[in-house]
Length: 471
Image 1 (cartoon, rainbow, N blue to C red):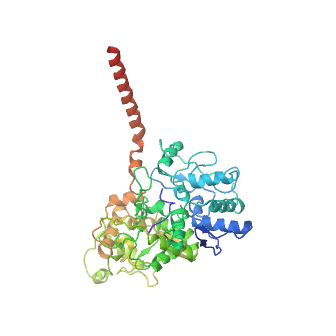
Image 2: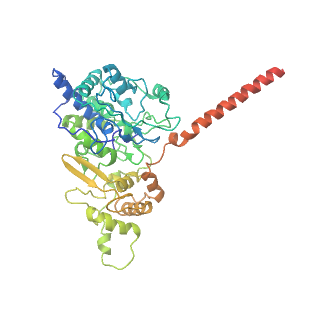
Image 3: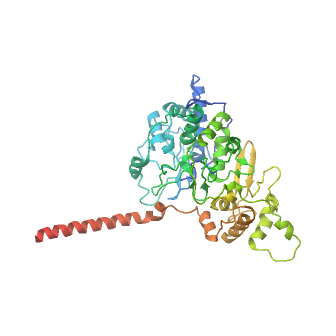
């Protein structure tokens, strides 16, 4: 599983211990009276919504001061300062303006936000929860009088007013309403998963206009370098053969031995959001995900975590004269010490096994490549899980595109899905942010195409006028 909306179009954050709060019906925690309870509720909501992930820069950035460059297919989008600073943040926002920014993507000055800010999901938030968030940001967050870098996307994507048209087409600005046919737990999970948690912004595929495709909710999508997999209850393409305990453990810890380990944006989501939610709220998310419509990908023949087995190849070759291929050499030198020569990982599962692993059994190799190139880094429950990246500047070993392809193919052949093959071009694509969607590829041609269309239209008008005059 890969995760929330920060790298879909972030990271870092809050880390204070959270009070035990739960949801009753749909609203999170009932008001207990007084600003202290409301602020605590707002803090929990902000954590569930993972606000700090995008609005706090990594490695010591001041909370919510913005400046984190969110990778998008169209270029880096810099998160705004959302501290209550009156000169650089949202300190001058009224609650109504705050609500419009969160739920409609409209800043206090009227400018439009890009959907890197998942307002399309936050549109579902209740008025009570918007109020609690507003009180929290205004009363507890420390103001920072520093403006983050401005976002500069290429023309025509830098025309923010164009988002008016996009929103008219794709923004459903209606509040969440419980489904009376569903249990209170499932409704609670739906509000958390598709509202606050905005899981759909990463796990739902998008159309050519970068809007989520209806009818394919949570069916899996590319996030650039990473893949957010299908998390519908389909037993082959999704998580249908995961138990509820498996899913709960994954959201709480990011590690389910014999199935998956969180990396990339999903590791960030667990580190900075999911691990702090109450057990009841995590169970509600699990209950919701388990009952959404199942979606099957035609490319999948069996569950991605079912591939592979331990290998005795390296032990059999040890001491035998001969020449190893490049992938086998790299595996022996860079991977076997932690993941073991047979791929079974460490006994405590700190280093995961390479077989029965979603990264090596998937029908696309993107997450395996991204893990090798970018590494794995998450801190959950006080435990830091780390694998260094083997990219340019690596302190362990700097692997070329061909090196990554070779060792990746070795791992797939001996521990994962052998039908999947990696080329150096695949690695180069992931290293540079992954495959570009059509809109990003044709963006530079939009204006010339429009200009050409105008010229053709004017020519046709001129031709009609000339013919009428001759007549």
